[in-house]
Image (tube, rainbow, N blue to C red; front, side):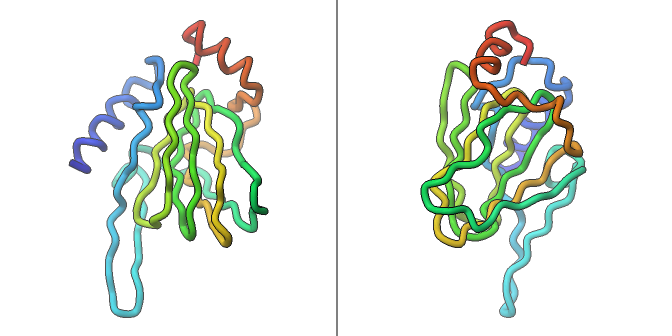
Length: 158
């Protein structure tokens, strides 16, 4: 099953993101966990066990209770979002459908495709959100206003 998820995801990106993206294109990707009596390790390698090269890594932490992060979409950027510690929810919205995904295991990641509005919320105490991104930071890739996002989706430009 994990290979099927990967193949479906890869087919979307091989089209250059040119098709209209949907929340159903965002999938949970199991990451290989290597167990050792001294602790576990999970290795993530771009284009090997995730469908894109990693150009930027960042993490969110010390998020106060009740706060939300994200609240934007990307035109080109792809992401793998992992709950490195604790748990949180990710609201995905494609302009027609919404889906909430709970992340709470460090060996599972959520692949978020371009053209999807995302909000991260309901962080547990001490949660750490690790994000692997396909591009370096580019403000022009962001859609930060939800009304503009809906307009771009309606006109098939996102």
